[in-house]
Amino acid sequence: RGPKDYLDAALEPRATAEELRKLALSEYCFVRLAVAQHSNTPPDVLEGLFPASIRSHAEAELVLALAANPSSPDSVQRRAADETPTAV
Image 1: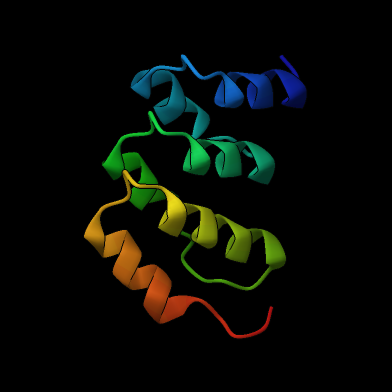
Image 2: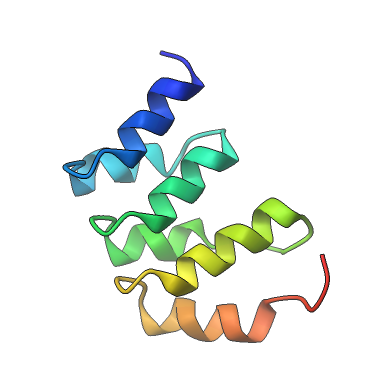
């Protein structure tokens, strides 16, 4: 499987929580972003996607996606508010 296959799987509206859990471990930032945006992604997976530090545009975009996902736990919302940089 190639990167596009993983992205297509993460964008699939019927993707299961377990499929998204596996895709969250992807080496591809665009796949992790799609998982962060998916409504079926479990809260613990969303929390695990939060980057250790926000040093790039891709990491900042991921944090914004996590904050926008209604399934994100309060802890993710607080971290996003506290750690979103003013400039990346």
